[in-house]
Length: 481
Image (cartoon, rainbow, N blue to C red; front, side, top):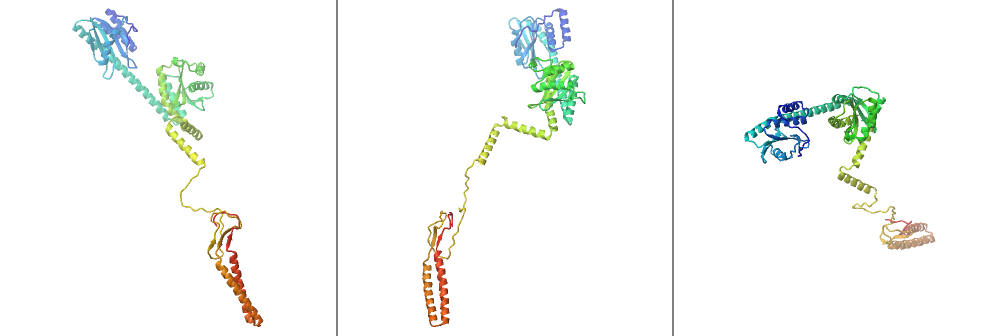
């Protein structure tokens, strides 16, 4: 807390001074004026009062002097007793060397909002009791003032909330964006005393005028409407509130389009406010009136814009075509894929995709354990000409052989014996045939001839088997046979 003479108030004296203080107290228009006239009245009613100090709570929670009496003195030495009264939330009396310092906290049932400190001459207890009585009497004025001020602020908050609720319901009740915009601008014009309010909506990175207050129809090609759209584009591109006349905080903003529109229409005060929904600007309000827009009006417009931005975005989304909806959804998907949200999930998904692509396109061996038999792609079968045993088998299944190479040889001992037998029978039959012819025994000759033919056929069969006892490869081949 700092104390000084920023608020000079002259010491009142006599009935004329008291009358002037009461007249100023009755005519006070602000809290500061009322407090600066209240403190001299209180000190004037306390006998032996040397100085007075009034502290009130600031918006940041600290306490600062709002009035001192008399104004030409430095009253910082009253700070400790005021601090003690604020901490203890009760009256504090101190007697530092020849004077009495009495501090009284200003508090309601719910909050502590200030303190009053009065320094007296070191008098008897009766004078101190009277001073405390006067302090109680005077503090009642400030407590009542604070209560009324709090009630007024609460009423203002309720009234602003009611208007916000009403305007949001009005926007939601309409079926399309244009009708919702017209309902909103009409209420804004009535609320803020504007002779015209316009709503612009975003269309392809530019702003188009969608609604004009108190006007069911307007010509979009009119010069005034085009100038209004250009003024809205300035606020849209800069994503900032633009006010004319310019405030100090907005001196660096571009206002060429807004000034051109003001010169053309003769408007004294303009305010362009963006309607934001998340990270998107979905529209712009352009308000016109004669009186400048106060900081409270601008804050109220910002609050209403934050509430209505998502509503207008929903209205606009409901009216877009299927192609526009698909493009917007695809753009949002790309933004979510490339932004920094959910890094762990995106890293896991990217890893799964990379592993899948690697397994799909990288050539590698894949082994399956199971029972199987291996066969050649081209197979040749060597069939045995007769039943028997294999004597030799130089080639095995799976070997590569050349044409004419011996694959296997069958056992031929029995065939050779049978060959000798049939050769012997053939000679016997031929000899009998010759004897029958020599004796002119035609029957014996013919019987012997038949036996000779049979023996010759059996001999040919045996010779054929002997010739086929060895298997040979017909051509170059590999695999089983």
